Image (cartoon, rainbow over all chains, first blue to last red; front, side):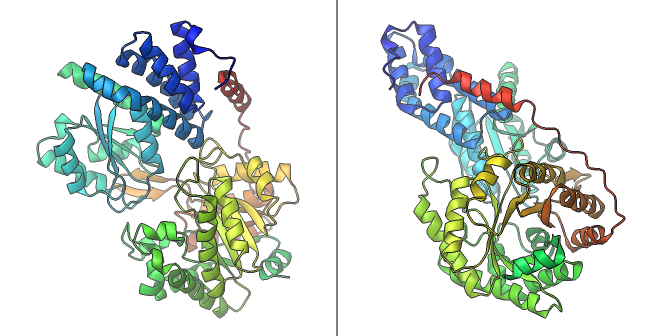
Length: 228
Length: 323
């Protein structure tokens, strides 16, 4: 750690700002130290999460969307976020902090591409969501099993191939048949996926990139909560 | 003089083939199944695809081995068949090329591992290099003339691929990257950064492939040519983007669009010009005809330089507190 930066003497606002900056730059050890320092000053785990880590990942998301940051920087920021979350997660559970939401995400059957989907998973975690990442090549049973096991708010489906994206419709149709489509937010993404396709298959939205996925998820979760 | 040099010297502009995956799906490959397995299951279908491209005018054909490293084949539990599947890919293309009554160069396609190198991912440089070396050796054994690394986004992975390819003997090596994210690769590499690295690797040619369609690659070629006018540049653009229209998926890069692109790419400095996903022999034929037509005129609308890039850089820098 840089000797010139003494976090003990730093006002809390500055500490949080530094935490955001270090997260942005992917400095995991520094983020951990700042999370511990913020907790030791009496901030609640939820405050540290939202005002420190999530606020930092918000900036990462915006700069990724705008082409300021690219995949390597986002991955390093996500690693720093993860290091901070190792401290915060048990404390959040203990203190019964409000949950942002739960996401089940996977690449659909026939498709083995996962870099974009993993970015979405990381950015959603960065935004405070609980994320169940099913990996690649998921059939309907895999999605349904995860829905039963984790009771998510959101289902995210990804496809890179034009030949696999139609499978998203199969999953949406199964949700409808089971009568649970209205209980869930369905987000779809991947290079060939567009708004017209999302609308056509009955998804709630198409998300162009990981930053848009977070924005959309937060917006739709707010609407979902209002509806109760 | 190797065969690729022969072509570039006699042809001026060398016409490359188009999409392989697009043709495989049209021939009945089920999504999610490994294309490379068809080299032994349905070699006649692969040969027919090569044949189609040769008849359309392609002078370089790429083998059906894009996902042929052990990292990709492992996703289909085929990692123990790297040698068999790549060698077969090379032999099929070799046979198709040798049947032509003019020189057709066989290029052994080598795509990314799909893994990220340390520290971002788990793969070491050595593992990556060994995987590419294994694939390259099998392609060489099957009779390719060139090793053709494509669709790369990470400069370190491309270094590993080139090192692996060079260990397979003294075949010429070509390498292209995909600049599909705000004018850079997914990993943030600009065309000029790519040129700076690739230019030092003793490649026969380099450039861009795949991505978001012709306009993007035109920008890449322009940037590289401006920075290094002597570079032997490759343009292999997708046939536009797949669009979901009326319940059907269609690429918006029609043969006519791609014919314009071919002439523009040549004007901007590309010497080897072909196409990638979404393209078919019909596209390549239209491109070959356009390139052969001395009266063909094309309006070159250069992509606007990313005026925001300086501002973006300063936005990033200003955030740095440490280091």
